[in-house]
Image 1 (cartoon, rainbow, N blue to C red):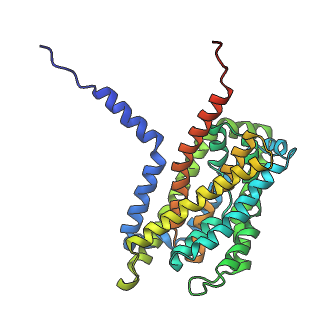
Image 2 (image 1 turned 90 degrees about the vertical axis):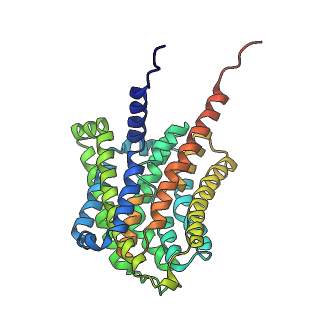
Image 3 (image 1 turned 180 degrees about the horizontal axis):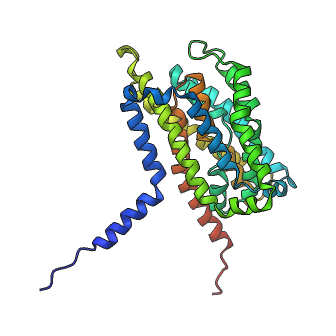
Length: 341
């Protein structure tokens, strides 16, 4: 009797596909753990402020370069959906998070508020909208507007919401406005101006995937720097102030809960206003997603815990993938032709 062959080739292929599809999340977990565990020997990396600022500016430039500005102008012809997305992202999300934050300990609450006041992610809002069958032009416009104005909006919200938490952080409004303008807005403006030169615009559009990989590598560098800082913070806590399991559970529940509530509010408020389904999907994703890059920069500049921001980012990637696929299938069933009996 012939022995049954083990399908080793199929297994290896499956493992390879799994790693390729989830390399960013796997790398995120690795740099987060290694930074926290090895923070003592890695302190010089965390203290290299020039390196951190350079990474932020480079990543925002690389993320903005493939963004098609012409899609933004198209979406502006019907300003209702993008305006609602901006309201959800920059008004509703901070207010909801501010209320939820009173159920968390101060350091985790401050980290949640940082996540809430950061702009829409440049990396995935349009992608997830398109994946669900939505109008990605609306998502692009929400992304550009929130990132271009974050240098004013983010410091305002943090100064107001953290004002009662003076023991946690003091916000230097002028310094934060200037820093975000230089590190976030300026690279995006330069990238969009370069796109006006047709050869660069075409090249950036055709090579958007390699640019995205480079951007994600920069994000991993920022997470690594933040993890080193978090490791030092956790190690320096007195035993009676260390995070308990309940603290972690409440923080994760609060972060994921805020994201899901904003996503649902965006969709159903757009529905109530009579917007088309594809616009409702764009409002839901662009209104609820947050960019890890800006959140990390703000948290590190203010000396705040980065973990809520990381949890928010990972949570939105995992949860929104499931939601986008489900909404896409619902849309396909709605549009499917009815077979004659």
